[in-house]
Image (cartoon, rainbow, N blue to C red; front, side):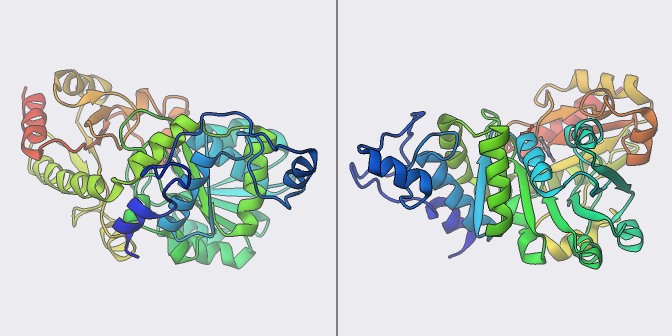
Length: 386
Ligand SMILES: *Cc1c(COP(=O)(O)O)cnc(C)c1O
């Protein structure tokens, strides 16, 4: 089946008891097993029935089937947040003495987790400045390689094919944070990536009302990640959030088409505006990653970043004048959002690390929503006026 059909139908069955069309919300912590013998069978895995919502929940289980189909994965796991996903992946796949490599930059929270917390497990973190640098210099001790296809917040394009080739040289597992593109635009597993993860909070949820994380991939890797995420770290998603996520995911293709359309129009407008120093949007032919992303992805995403001359003060003047765009972190919502990463999402990084990752004080990140493009452009235009 095609992607739009999968988003609506995959993983969903009519409720056998009531015929309910949509996945029911099973708001229950525990599931009774009627006889002691059955309890024994459930714990040994002989009976696949539900036990306890930290291990598995029927609402979440249907959502996981849908997401696995959308990613082209054997299996998907839904957890409490994107950070719960990344931490479970790392603790499941890296041991003390191993090296975890990443292509700079990463989401600020992921960067902080690797450098401040994962290192305490005796794991070495190695930074590579680009996909090419990784391919040329990957260390043989590397066990896991983490990257984002379109990086946050400066929208650099990392070629998943190069990361896969680099990892192959040393037998490392590749992990792609696909939050910015979603499986509608890019399915990393089809390019040989081992695990794909998301902040489900963003485009997958799409309505700015939940925090969620997703991991998908081959069964043997997923089994390890599932055990660590749910049984050891203990970060299941709540059934209510799972319900809202499955509801959001059904309209992912429709929303992404609207985000793409608007982002293209906004980028074109900003590119022609003399008050904008630089427009960073992979959909512009001038973007260094334009061709690569065009080859692997069905679209260029809904995020547009710009640089304004004059650092924090100039950006603050622009942000404070915006009326339709809301100043907030997060992205992928129906509403257009704007933020200044250097003073917010990436403030925890040192100035040096920010400079190396290309997060300058002049940078403003725009998450382009699904409003009418003309209204968004009018708002940007008035905010750029002196
Ligand atoms: C938001 C985000 C995360 C973290 O996800 P949470 O749901 O906030 O925990 C990870 N990676 C990227 C690219 C993100 O945008």
